[in-house]
Image (spheres, rainbow, N blue to C red):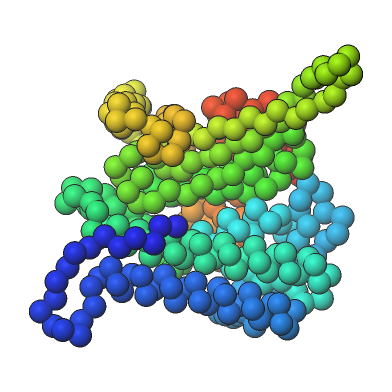
Length: 339
C-alpha cells in the first residue's frame, strides 16, 4: 500500500491539517491497531477481538477436505469454510474470530490471516478516499463516488440500489475467485493470487482486479549424463475488466465499448500498470440484485451472495477466468472444492 500523500492544500488556519495528513493519520492508526493485536497474540497467545458482538465463531475441523478446515454455526446451520471463505466474507461485512480451543498453531495462523486481511482492506478503503479527493478528474470522481457508495452500502449492511448491480457483480466474481484461490493449490500444481485494485486503477486504467498466477512444470536437465529434475516456475500477471450483462442494454455494444476503453489504456503501456496484459471478460448475470437481496434477507450468512449462484454459473465463471490465465485445470476440480 503506497504511503505517499498527494494533496498540496494550504489552510488559512495554522493548526488545521491537510486532508492528506488526515488520511495518513487514519492509515497509521489502523496499522497501530494491527500491531497491537499481533503483539497481544505473541504475549497472551489469545486476542481480545474488536467488535466481538458482530463476529461469528470459527471451530477447527482437522480433517476438512480441500482446505475447508473451519466450521461456523449460523442460525442453526453449520457451514464449512476455508481460509479463503473467511477472508472473502469481510468484503460483505461478515466477520469471524477463532475459537480459543483450537490448536495453538492453527489459532495463531487464522488469527494473523484475519487481522492482516481486515487491516489491509481497511487501509485500501482509506487510500481510495484519498485518491478520490486528490488524483481524479471531475468526471472520474463521479464514477469513483458511485463505486465507493455501493461498497459502503455493502459493508454497512444496507440494501443495494438497482444502478449498483454492475459493481456488485464485479465484487461477487472477484470474491468468488478469492475463495477458490486458497483451495486450488491443494489440488493442482499452480497457485493464483487475487489482487484488489485501487479506485484509480478501476476508473482510469479499467482494471477491476488483478490475478497473479504461478504454475510449475516438471523439466529434465542433463548434466554429465546424469539427469536431474528442475522446477520451472511460470509467472504471469493479468488485469481483468468485467463486462456484466444484467439488463436490456445491447450486449454487443457494451463489449465493444469496454474493448475500446481497454485498447486506449493499453496503448499507454500495460507494463507500467503492473500487469502483462488487460483482458476483457463478458459475463451474463441477470439475477445479481435478486441474489443479493435474497442473501441479505437471510441475514448475510457465510459465503456472500455468490454462494447462491447455481453450480453452472460457478463453473462458467471459473472456466472463463482460468482459461484467460491458461492454467491446466483438471475436469472436476471446481466440484471438489465446492463439495
